[in-house]
Image (cartoon, rainbow, N blue to C red; front, side):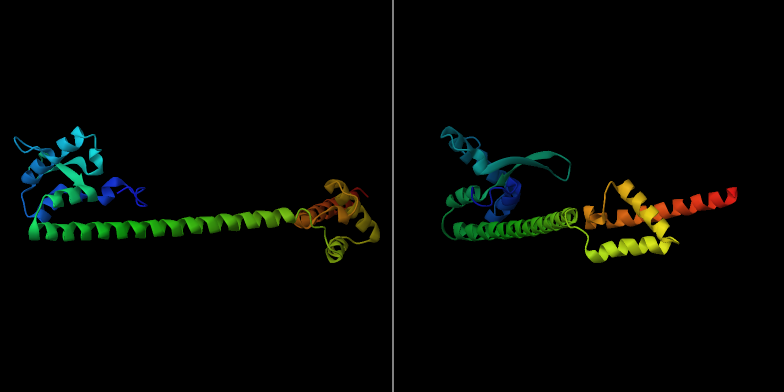
Length: 219
């Protein structure tokens, strides 16, 4: 069972020994004797242990509670474990049991493959989201290196003129904005600074209006 499905949780690719017993048409207690032995019946597990075979490749010990609440032993039988039990049978019984357990394992393996496919789709979506965020970050970073166009520089000047009343005030606001931004000309800014520049222009013109109002009150 150590193939491309080996990363799946072991119990997902096993059959409960109680179900195996039904497939074989025998009592569960009798099947347990075949697996771990009883009295003169040597059992499969003791033979495997004697020859140093890993028992968990065939049978994984487990338990269950019956209707009275009593805890009883059972095994999770792997595909190889079922094959070993099937080899003990002859004729039609062996053929029918093989057909049943092979069908069961094929169903489980198909289910696992479906789960793996779903997981792959989820991982692909997560990768797409990560790439989208990276692209956005790169675009935002690039804005820090793109200088404003002539049209954008004229737009800054138009905003200042629309908020002031004279060429003198335009010059004052422009110089104050340059000073606050630590630049000497619009060419020293970048596209990413556009919002910050407009906010600074608006704030400076408001302060200028407040100063003018205070001066008028003092006259």
